[in-house]
Image 1 (cartoon, rainbow, N blue to C red):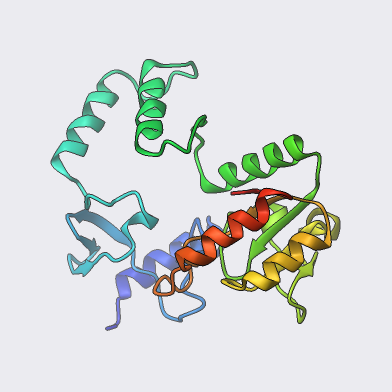
Image 2 (cartoon, one colour):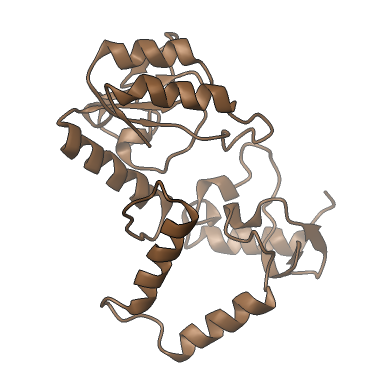
Length: 235
């Protein structure tokens, strides 16, 4: 990518107030080098930087922009909501309508609670699973991201199932002691981890966030669910 002095200037300015100059580590570009693109606006399938250059957006804000950016119907709905106020700190009918829509689209989701981030969702899922099963063990697949809660910041070691190798500074060893990491798409390793200790929940992804071109085969996903049924609840 060509030199982008304006982005460099914004990054330098951001670093004086924001750790690393970004509000999420994945935006820092450290793994790939260079300077992150500071977006000024977006429309349809394109992002635009401060100089007005357009970029095809393959990220889609990590999922929510499935209709593209600034879709007219979405904008109209957002404007209508803002006109009624931005936050109430109290229940609303819209929350019920939203939950009903999710249940209609995904019948397996019998109950749901809306949260502000994926980290909150996985923390709540782990706590609910542990409370329901009265078990402490958590299994996660290597290479999959489930938020930055302490129990998920565990790295894989040399074994097929590794417990409690903390992968981030500031995380006490005890916080991740009950989390096992198994290779992605390795059903025998998953079965061994399930048999090794009582497990409350299994966390994996249909495809790892870091290599989306390699989805989890449907047969493996179903086998994992069957294997976990008697010993854990899959999430």
